[in-house]
Length: 105
Image (cartoon, rainbow, N blue to C red):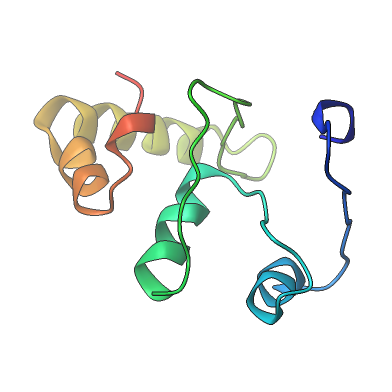
């Protein structure tokens, strides 16, 4: 992030919700976050405005964690994800939460 800033100062904060508090208090102008959090934040804060980049800025890989070697649980999760993609539940839930633009086929 620091390398991409041309006329801004980067503040790295170390407490939960500190970046949001800095913007709300006027001590910072913006905060950067991933797309899912931005949607949740906008839904719960009427003072916030999204400034979206004109193209993908950074891809954040998401995953679920599980105990190594738990093949049965891994298989069940993979089956569930495959099923909800095929029957439309995943895209439906994503649309409901305004996340459909980041759902992979």
